[in-house]
Image: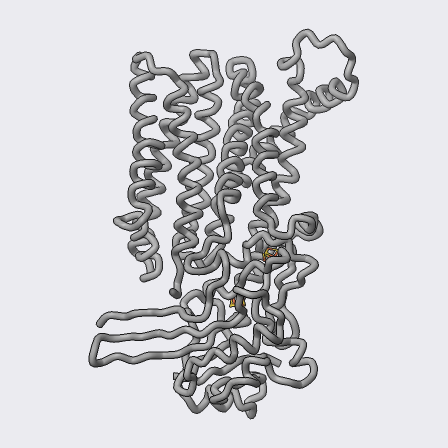
Length: 313
Length: 177
Ligand code: SF4
Ligand code: SF4
């Protein structure tokens, strides 16, 4: 019995022949959101653990990137909007059921907080600053006074941000590939590992580098476990999800996913990091870049392939 | 009040009059459509069957497009109609992703558009324009909460199906089979 389906009437742009309403903007936004969440998570974690002195890159230096990353990410989200002049409507309501809504709000909270965090370390950037900038000093004093509570807020909101980048997709029950609750934790772990890779790359201290290289190894292990879990879940699910998983198991995304994301983005950097920890000289930029690149294309592949997967035709 | 549409796939001849009527009535931009006709051929020769279906937004009772909309632009109206408030839509595409029927599209003017069951006509006591032009009278429109209505009676007496019920959206366009 073979079945054939033919669409005659509909040819809506960006909907047919396959859905493509989200282009590069959303995957970039998800990647940058996860990266910012990762850096902020470690900065606040090690502040709360009282290890600011030993880990200057994690707590200070890397966080200077966060506001830039978040602003570029929000810019990408803005570019995705088709009715750009109405974007402020995002901030007229909070709709808990809509991940797009609480994601927009969590970014609204985390962006100014991350800026204040950086401003409190502004002397790192400009050690010999001559001019008197009272407002900088004011923010510096304020953040230093409330650093611990602020770190608590940041650690919680960075976890929410990281999970959100996955839940934004998994909330769509119409797309079988996305409709799995493992996507939230998977994207969170992937975001944390890109954050750790960035810190490792920027760091000049031996202790910090090897700490973050170990953290990265652990996170890669968890990610591989989640990916196996993802496919096990699909294969044990309904026909639409089995078909969606097929996109990665012989279908159009097989090569980019297994070679690009899994081998080049996870396994190769893991091997390089193990070799480095065993004392081989490996330029730290290589595993770091591979992890960042793997995380980026992972989002692109998931967003693209998810739009192809569907319940109907 | 629970508006629903019932479409007899045995009577549909696939002429696409409903599509043209809608494009006219709702000034749908050229190259876009709010409703469309599907030809669904099944089986292997000589046991082949063809089903023709006029499809559109199902005005789902549990609609993911309303749930996922960050601004509340997608909302329910009287009779269970699912509508888009053009002035509140930012065009983020979340609802487009969330519709298992791909019934929505991004209007060139920025907002998201889809079938409205011709709610402007319903207010005047008329039926949706696709229903009113169908040359074979294969479409019916009415209130499912009224057990005497034509749509309720048809669903009582005939075999029917809805599209992709497994997604859990509770679609309100019914196909007689
Ligand atoms: S068919 Fe799609 S657009 Fe219409 S109510 Fe259902 S989910 Fe929403
Ligand atoms: S595109 Fe418009 S209607 Fe759809 S979810 Fe976004 S704001 Fe709501």
